Image (spheres, rainbow, N blue to C red):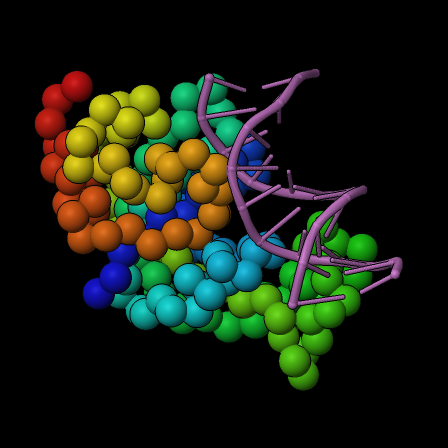
Length: 153
DNA sequence: GCCAACGTTGGC
DNA sequence: GCCAACGTTGGC
């Protein structure tokens, strides 16, 4: 099983909304590397749900992949925000997976707090200029973050 | 709102 | 196939 991290702006799609709705299609990814990461996902893979572009960015919870990559239909919606004429139903360019909330972190972890963890020094999320919206997380990083979330602040 | 980082596009 | 211009992301 592999681990991942999904970024989302809470104003677009928050952890709370995911919990309320029970599942979602991770549509709208328009970066090839992020897409390729999604295409490698298997049902049962876990990922962190990260809130970006807010005053204090944070990891809010854990999601589970419940459907493997399939064509992102928002690319075909003319006039939609995610329309891309290069992607057709016959030859899709963009893909999405479905995820469901797995567990809320015992304690949310903020970006500044994550930056203080030596084990996470090389984590993609924390590297300057790393803006991938869907990225892999190593087992070491995964465990370090989960155990940190179980410790009091 | 600024701007660094960096992916993408398109002219040549 | 190079690379300048452009657009986007996302922390600050």
